[in-house]
Image (cartoon, rainbow, N blue to C red; front, top):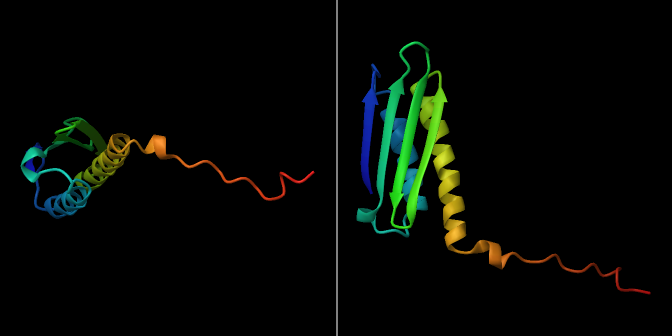
Length: 117
């Protein structure tokens, strides 16, 4: 997976990097079915100039589509957590659509007491 993370107006990026690495490993496990050179992850941290909040935008380019998520919180670690959790749910939903899980939905079994007259 090709990774590019940028920081805009963030003073200390060393506190954020371990959390970002942990989330990237999690996403790498979800995307292991794709060839590593075809997956690109772009992320950017930005501190709002007039507010005390951070925004994290992350996007993943896959061979089957591009997914994008954002997270906003008072500190950069929480904004990364929100963005990556949203991205993880999008990846799971995207992969279930590719597998056509909606066609394999099982119907409820009939109850034993319903057919008696």
